[in-house]
Amino acid sequence: MATDYDAPRKTDEELSEDSIEELKARRMDKNSGKVDVDEAEVAETFELPGADLSNEELSVRVLPRQADEFTCSSCFLVHHRSQLAFEKNGGPICRDCAA
Image (cartoon, rainbow, N blue to C red; front, side, top):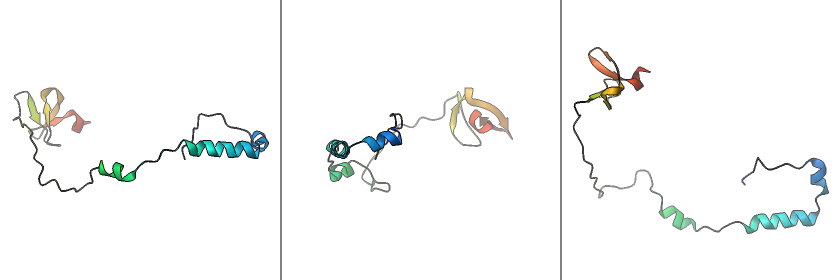
């Protein structure tokens, strides 16, 4: 059940003053707001990890490394030249790996 922590809280004295009828009415109001959801429909929209994707075909255009890019010798990702921190043992290191 969700709790609204920002809502004002009643003291013990106020809670003891609530009548049985008020409490029953509140319980009925809480149950009336619930929505029935068909779980079968919801489950069909999710992809399971390890699903069979053998019939799927990817169409991605791969570009070669550009003149203003380098491959980090630590993480092996291609970065723009502005991300170059320094060179270590002849290999470029990106700012993320240098941090």
